[in-house]
Amino acid sequence: MDAPAHFATGEHIRTIDQIPAEQLVVPLAVIDVKDRADKDPDTVLTVDDILAYERRHGRIPEGAALCMYTGWETRAGSAQQFLNPDDSGVMHFPGLSPEAAAFLAAERNVAGVGVDTISLDFGPSTDFRAHFEILSRNKWGLECLARLADVPPAGAMLFVGAPKVAGGSGGPTRVLALW
Image 1 (cartoon, rainbow, N blue to C red):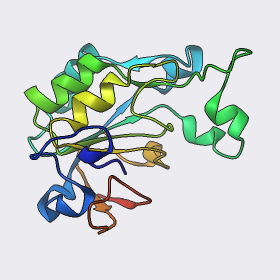
Image 2: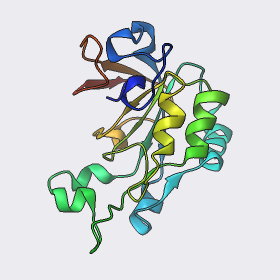
Image 3: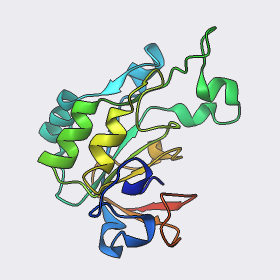
Image 4: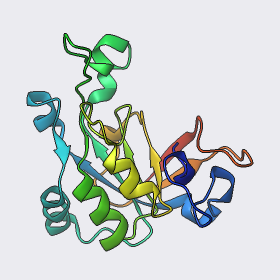
């Protein structure tokens, strides 16, 4: 889990122990981009993906979590496959576009976002704008999630067992979805 303080600074930015409990038990929306990720490891979740999801499943509830399923968890047994570096060492895996991250934080007021890859940003990112768009607005991020394919697109609740480390910027987290 990345707390807002993982990438953002300022008096208003929360550390992991300052995230209110009511923002850790939230409705869950899951957007499946696996087919696209299978063809393009650098694919990103877009605002259009979010709007298409909402046309089918309804508006993402305020205070919910939005998780992106890419199928990347199947690569977790191999660092080489999970990080997917090219010959020059640049990693290639899906993530959130900065525009989608900003839309989720500002227009949908999500509590946080999650991915089944190692980063909220896609692999080749050098500016980590998706992280900044989410975390600078006091939202949290979850990385390396497993079994998102088992969760329905809408109707589940997410329970985030955030570590209570004073002043922490993140850490290992147990995450459960129930429906």
